[in-house]
Image 1 (cartoon, helix red, strand yellow):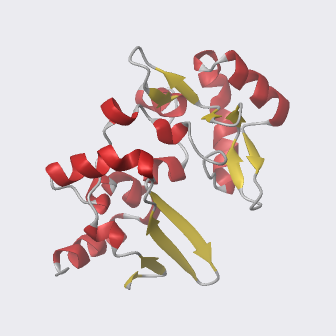
Image 2: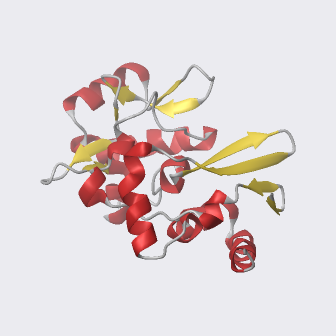
Length: 188
């Protein structure tokens, strides 16, 4: 068990290899799944604020769903998740000329239209954070659609925590991440 502050981290986060390979997976993690991406309460407001800025980049179906049910819905676990189109695509997806699924919220951030990058759960993927009474758990979510990311990560010697440096700092802070790096260096 790895513990930093009030956070228990799965050893897989330090030991497993991972580096997204969009040329192979085409961003399937934004399309496949049981429900939309988890969204924190304060992110609902941010998504509502960014909607007018990204509206023109969304599909007709996405706009209709957002106008009908909002940017999020509550899933079967009682959690806020992004709304989805036809039981698959996140409403915030778009596709590039190569058929690769991208995030329009991230696109707007990269273009300087907003300082909101995207929901933290999306930024952190393949790590999932669960909140429990008195502590948080940081777990690596192993999904078959990410096999190319595991292969690329191993080829480039990139571990999950290294690949996710920016989002982990965004979620937990610099000090937390520095402690994670120290712990990783001391791993057998």
